[in-house]
Length: 260
Ligand code: NAP
Image (cartoon, rainbow, N blue to C red; front, side, top):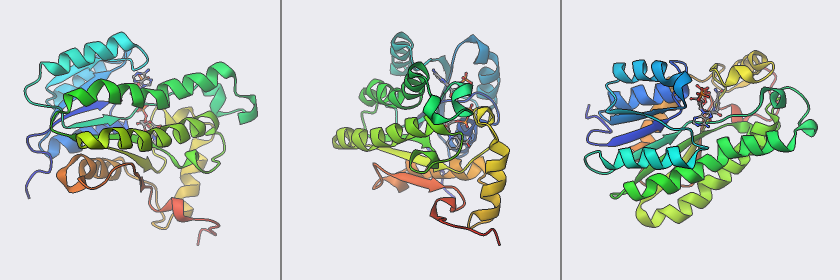
């Protein structure tokens, strides 16, 4: 079978470790022939991401905290040195204070609310603005979202509001960038056990609930999310923009399920 991303260069932001959704996406991109650029956030993550990047034969591994404009500028400067244009970008980044993912949403602080919005939603806008000029032959920008944007998922709280903002940003960015043939989409993944997810109170109960009620009667595999990211980054996805694509074993369709 031909490789779906042969000849394409992809930037993936958000690999923290082997369990990160961004790692599964990076592996699938490499399998499909993409040349890969990874980023890590600060010295704490450097060694792990460099080791994973070496395994994946990444062309570059760069530091980038998306809340720091100087680091985004540095990332763009490095990307300009790559041969050819940038074809695909994956934004797999989110953050909220742990206490805002356990107490009632009503108690969310102003700082906690703004922090979640800045890292988890505004960063898509700043990343898009930074990388779009490098996507001279068009391309695809994909972010990761969750059902908590439109439905109440207990304890997801401030992150659900940030994901609502992220999904609206996808639509506005798709509108702005479409004339440059740059597509912008979100994948709404079912719950997956990762470092970020473990910060959400009672996350394992969410996994059990989904496995019993989802049409496919199981949880989502990172590799399933990754294969959809391949589709969106590839020419097969050329007509898809401004969308939220659910990769969640069908859970989003369920109103009242009895788990039979
Ligand atoms: P993860 O492995 O913890 O990935 C989150 C990434 O965001 C980490 O690499 C983290 O880096 C990075 N990050 C946080 N703040 C940053 C900043 N200021 N600058 C740059 N990077 C920053 O968890 P994940 O579950 O794979 O999350 C990836 C995306 O998928 C997130 O948007 C998440 O909301 C979404 N998602 C996850 C699930 C799920 O159930 N796991 C479901 C749907 C959607 P550090 O580790 O260095 O902080």
